[in-house]
Length: 109
Length: 114
Image 1: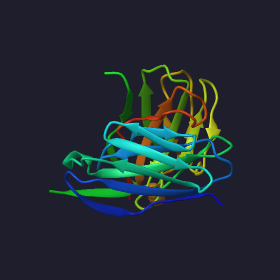
Image 2: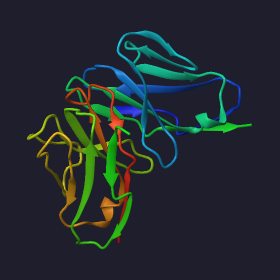
Image 3: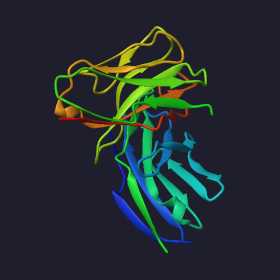
Image 4: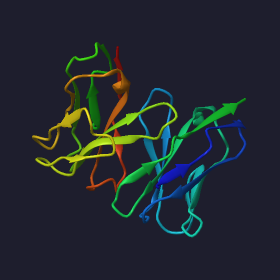
């Protein structure tokens, strides 16, 4: 079957760094997306990786290892506004997105 | 402001009633989608449309229907609502067909079926 695994919840301190992991099993692979979703709001696009390696975008970075079926989202210099759910989604060979249930990130002062 | 507009934002309805969730985008995107989001589960695709005039079934299409008469509008209809359709529904669009590109989501429609 196809599935995405990511932790249900994580807690971190304001100003710190946090890494949210995601492992995937899909029928073929055409890329990995990360979305941010604040409570009661719509998901918004953060990143897309299709090649191995690290993509940096400001305070957020996303890493992909295709051979390991693994990705992570790295958030630096955490701010209170980063409290949200982070959704991992893998695109399979049929260009269908397989979504994880999301990781709820709680930032404490 | 460009983007996707969904209506209603929230609705409570009795089981057996018919309900249409509206979705309009002004980005001229080719593809549109309807997802449902339930606690503890990932987003699940209900129906999609890669271009005006065409629609397709997603992962959980039963009990739902869609139409795509033009580029901008993609309504979702529940012909006879059941309690298991209680969920938050998100409409989304993308420039690229399929789910290959960045998705732009509406603010969601919270539906409660009693």
